[in-house]
Every structure is written in C-alpha cells, then in structure tokens.
Image (cartoon, rainbow, N blue to C red; front, side, top):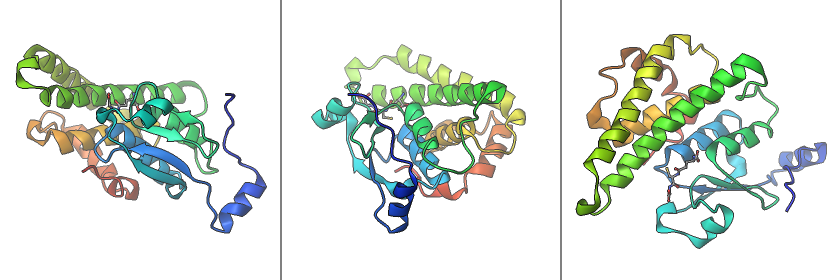
Amino acid sequence: MPFRPLLKSAAAKIIFSFGDAIKMKLRYSPTSPFVRKVMVFAHETGLADQIEIIPTDARAGSSELSRENPLGKVPTLVTDGGEALFDSRVICEYLDGLHDGRKLFPAVGGERFQALRLQALADGIMDAAVLRIYENVRPENERSPGWLVKQKKKVDGGLDALEEEVDGFGDVLNIGLLAVGCVLGYLDFRFADDNWRAGHPALADWFETIIDRPSMSATLPG
Ligand SMILES: N[C@@H](CCC(=O)N[C@@H](CS)C(=O)NCC(=O)O)C(=O)O
C-alpha cells in the first residue's frame, strides 16, 4: 500500500482548531526508553495530544502488533491514515514533519549527521541496556554471564564516549540530545545501582539541564 503522509492542509488545521484532533495511535510501553523518546519528541513538538496511547506488551507477542510491525516491537505508530511506522527513529522523523515549529532533526550537513550519530549512540546504549534486562528475566539456567558482561561493556563504552563529547553538545535541543536524555533516564530507572554518574561527571551535569524539561517530567518511566 503506498504511504500517505498525514494531511497538513489548511483545512486540517481548521479541524484541529475546533477540537476534532487527528489521532495517531502509538503502541506503547511505560518502561521502554524507545517509546519514551517518541513521547518526549511529541511533547517537545506540541503533538502529544494528537497521539492515542495503546498499552502493548511487546514481549507477550501481540498478534495485532505483529501485523503492524513484523519485528513485534514498540514503539510502533499507526498514522491517522492507518499506516504503521517503526522504529523510534522513523517515527520521530515522521513527527518532525507534522509541526511548524523548530525542527529537531537538523535539515542538512554536519549538524544533521552529528545529531543522527548521537541518536545512534544513545539508541545503541538503550539496546544493550534493554538486552541486559531481557537476559536477566530468562530462566536462570539459560542466562549467559558472558553475554551480560558484553552488553554492560557496550553501555559503559557508550557512556564514556558521551562523557568525552558532552562539552560539544551545545544548548539547542535536537534528536541526538533528546535520545541521550532518554537513555540516561533509562539507566536511572533500571540500573540505578550501577551509578553511571560516578565515572561521568560532566554528563551527569548535562543531564541536570534536561531532566526537568516538561517533556521529560511528563514521560517518566514506570
Ligand atoms: N530500534 C527500535 C528498538 C525498539 C525496542 O527494542 N523495543 C523493545 C522495548 S524497549 C521491544 O519492543 N521489545 C520486544 C521484543 O524485542 O520482542 C526502536 O528504535 O524503536
């Protein structure tokens, strides 16, 4: 089926102003850092009230989710036209096309690829941290200590890289910085005992500048 982008016409905007908001549906988990990334993005861009949350236990293997996303993962966004979009990167870029404010995906050049690379780094840390959680809920005799160590190394390596780069983050929120905020929030939520702040003081200071944004407060995991 060809992809039909959400209507952005003047007529659609008039419909919004009469309260009949176009609704997208988001397959959602309150603990997923990838879902949080999408929700923070939606709050930052003024789109949150156009998204209907559909709580979905991806790991339970929902057949509806599998129809929308063959990978069976959240977040998955179903547009008002019924098209399913994934993953969080694609959803965020889609949402960026739906608002008239400052774009969180820089349009071109070095600035764009810096932001996308930072998002990839933050997402990679999220992947490794989520895999640690999944491994730890497997039956004890199926768990691999070596695998857990490997994933922890990826988390630590990613944090070390962020600590080196944080001085160059700048003050202007973009998709990369937003993803970093979400992964640090996830580490606080799931791995508080690891105390990532201890070895990463500059990153910890930076996190304090983002943690109280309304978009972050409105999307706390749990
Ligand atoms: N690259 C994906 C990762 C999404 C992801 O890993 N989601 C997890 C929840 S945090 C999930 O749905 N896992 C279910 C499964 O793997 O079966 C994204 O950016 O959205």
